[in-house]
Length: 126
Image 1 (tube, rainbow, N blue to C red):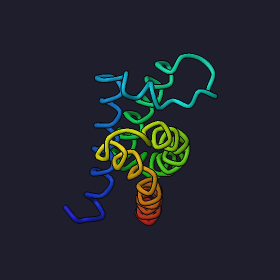
Image 2 (image 1 turned 30 degrees about the vertical axis):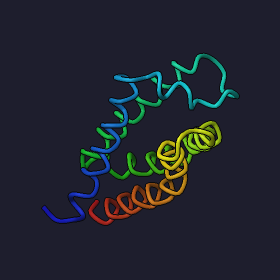
Image 3 (image 1 turned 180 degrees about the horizontal axis):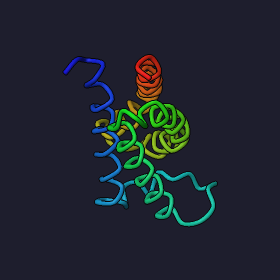
């Protein structure tokens, strides 16, 4: 399996793991849902977990890969406010937790670029 074939599957695995975590341990995600969103934080936690699982499935299938990759890039941009909220809320926590929260912020850009690269490669194979 070549690197370009492995890349979408790696991102799919990352999204599947994150999506599963939203259902397995929802409380940790409830706390980073921005207060400005309507409804219950748990609803947003489950919804974002379901979206991550759907994106993972879409990335795993060559026929839906391009669309899922573009949707993944948009998703990574869309969840950025939750990462900002986490960084602000965790600014007084112990150093390892604070570092993890702050580290999520710059991680979003490579994730967006990774998803866009997968979409570009999928276009070339269609």
